[in-house]
Image: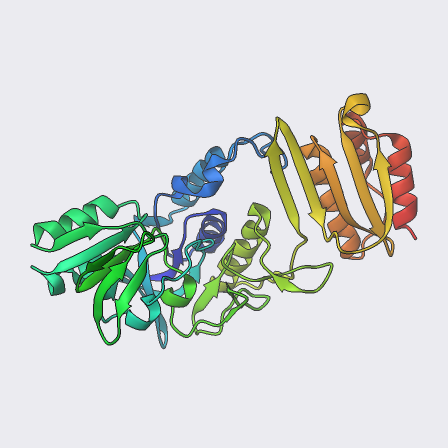
Amino acid sequence: MKYDLLIVGGGPAGLTAAIHARARDKSVLVISNDPLASPLSKAPAMANYPGLPGVTGRELLERLVEQARNLGAEFRQGRALSVMPMGKSVMVSVENDAVEGRAVILAPGVSRAAPLKGEAELLGRGVSYCATCDGMFYRGKPVVCAGDAPNFGEEVEFLRSIGCEVTVKRLAGLSILGENRVTGVLDAAGEATPCEGVFLLRASIAPARLAPGLELENGYIKVDAHMATNLPGVYAAGDCAQGVNLESGEKQIIGLWANANRQGAAAGANMAGGEARFEGNILHNITHFMDMDFIGFGDNRIQGEPLEQGSLEEDGLYVRAVISGGKVVGANILDSYRISGILKNYMLRLFAGEGGSLPDYQRAMLLQAGLRAEFIDRMEVMTRG
């Protein structure tokens, strides 16, 4: 079957793209490991997700998967190994099979594994990413397996079942030896193991190795405002794709579920024949430590006039905003998701050129959350210039 859209990745960006494409009646196949194995699933609470205050990361992913399924998106669990544009269609190899689509969205998240020494040079000359695909070439021969793929154990057992002499090694610190062909590996302890094949079974494959010729910038996939890459029929969204910092104008990664959702929505809508643009976002970071949430957003390199309120002892919260040129350019907040969400939305409105006053209901929410009226009044005066 040829799908309208293939999506590699089952996180917020990929699932949002699936939802938007199905809403436009396009056939969709989502290719990923278990979506609930995403790092987002470990988030204990997301108090600033619109309409779902306090939702856990796992609950959010479950709802996104359920919505996509109910709209008719299909799912296939497995690792995407390569993406091959072929004129008017794109082929994606999944384990030892291949699927075809009119276009593909790459949304696998960040590949946290750096290439091993010798990996790129010996790929296809003893280095493989799929045991069930290439294992028969090494039947009866010594091979090394390393990785963290969910089906790692199954891949190792398959190689053993066809007569390969398998040695399992850790990925960290591993080097692959050989010039024209693999001759062995050297592990982090300095122990050399002779072999003829090395199977690197990672949970996901870095974009540059997934789609040869894909243009990267600073290690991330370069996209335009429609989330299209330099390869025909190939789009990207989420943490793997480059974003634009709306404050500095710099191109950089903005790792945030809200950013991934917006990129996925733009990519899915454009692939389905719509017209959507993603212009960029602002930096945002949340850290949970010692039973407190440290929330920061904006570009702290920008100088401006600070505006502060209180302390945790007196007010139960601490807020510090920096205002420059009539805009909130950054803020640090302790222990209040509600305040952070409202201030960030206010900040985005100011960057969009909208008015400097908060809507009455948002002002009331800030007061209810503990922000003083003097702080809000002063912020509105400062942002009106």
